[in-house]
Length: 94
Image (cartoon, rainbow, N blue to C red; front, side, top):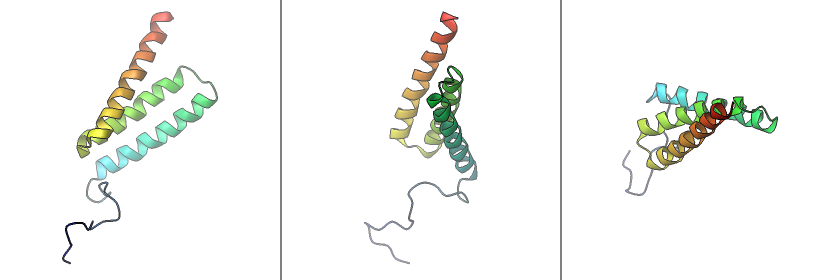
């Protein structure tokens, strides 16, 4: 198949499971962790929600680094720093 310059050979630009199985599993695990953390946040389960959110964005940061996706690296690095700050503040006030 000959593709033109503007054509994309895939319907997705993210790596597929068979090409990068580890990053595929980590991104889905991190996404599920973040969903549970959001549910915990809406139910006011502080500080446990912060720990889960930190693990979720850390997983996505790891995937972003594997994919070399700068925007995801920036967003998840900042999110990790924010959640670490919240976790440290929680333990310093305890």
